[in-house]
Length: 70
Image (cartoon, rainbow, N blue to C red; front, side, top):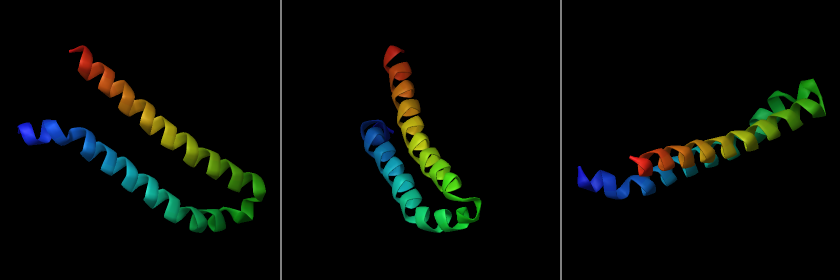
């Protein structure tokens, strides 16, 4: 179990990077999917993707602060 505790940041970073890369690779297909809604729909999708990435980082930092406080 100590192996997991020691490597938890690396595992979390790998998961975050995998989600980011998957979203980045799916972005052209998603942009074509919403293209019928006009340029504002594409802009909203791109903004949502960026905000989701920062929300993920914010939640991770919040969890880390909570764990360090215990």
